[in-house]
Image (tube, rainbow, N blue to C red; front, side, top):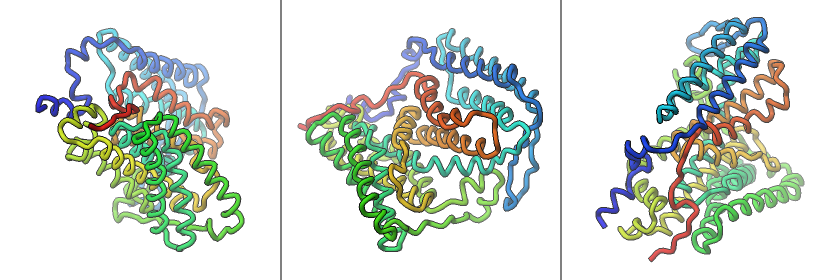
Length: 431
């Protein structure tokens, strides 16, 4: 019994030995993805290169320290970035040939170089407001990050949470109605927590107690919540607009930090929901790998039989953590109505729950990595809006699909081989 505990209660990545990594089959996903993007860079930046200058605006008038605009020549920048990308793609190929694998920092470096070349090319002759781009990225990422944290917690405990979309939408609806009735945004926030818990408890009851397929239950819950909220919107909220006029949280500036150039406006001039998101990410990341709660949760998600043997109540642990995951997703839904849009609309989450689920996979079921993945998807959406505003020649249809292209490429190409919690999606009957 004691021999089982260390194996169950350690992180999956820690159990992989160096010899196992050395003898693992080669994965060509990353080099192929790098090669495709390098080829695309050559076509766009060199063959289809544009003339002129691109100005990167790095600060706003309210920043404590002003940073002058950075002006770069489009064609020269394209040539340099394309060359660097080709070199990095070759290096990635050589690493795999030698039975190695590219690290996370390598992918980040490659992405940043490509992004620099793409922004210079797409905004040729225009001024690109980088602070506005980052503010939009953070704002659009908030519900994705809450949803990703919900997915990480739920799947780490062994329950596949496809119902993130329904939890976000239920939170958005409940927060709008309760805040409108009471005139208090805090009450709406509490209502969003409760709505998320209700949806997640429904998932837990069917998946854990009645052993129904977890993916099917999640999809059905999403359809149910979409249909129910759409019906109530048409029959109730549209008939009485007073029920859909919630007060919004005002932005709160953090002294000094909000005046830092570039990142200050994006990170520290936000509403209370965004600051709750920062807290949630920090708490979940710490608790998952540094507390008894995290150890038990990961044990149940990896090896429920062993966890049951050492006295952990598997079903109760799953119920509790799935409920917690739903509450976190509900907060993400509240951001739509209390921090962003200001009213509830039909299907206003627009697939954010599925993007959050992709962020969970891209982030390898780690709260910090999943948060970064959600930020990536939010940045892609914000970039779509900004390039449209400045009149970029990039086709609007391509810009509309950009966030989803990034999602597909990230999950299918750049993430490489991943292994989720071993018991995720598998029912377990406690002894």
